[in-house]
Length: 113
Image (cartoon, rainbow, N blue to C red):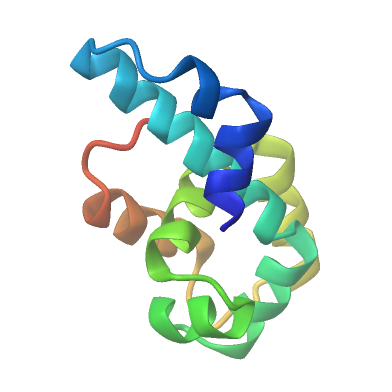
């Protein structure tokens, strides 16, 4: 639902796609990143990383699908990445870098923002 709301806000529902495959794919990635950012805060992600080391369980705790979690992990800014490190202080069940590598393997076409 959040993904479709972002499309509506950007007026993609009116303007539509351009028909150029790579550009449409890029637009979809941007929309999914915005939706993931809205659904998963840094504080929630840090708390979830303390609770579990399983990406599926983390996604479930955050009430999102695994793809949304992976997109959010790949879209973390350097500042957000540091903030999660501060919040978890090495107590995370699995290092955030490892979760990000897993996300990158799971979404091979997704480019970080």
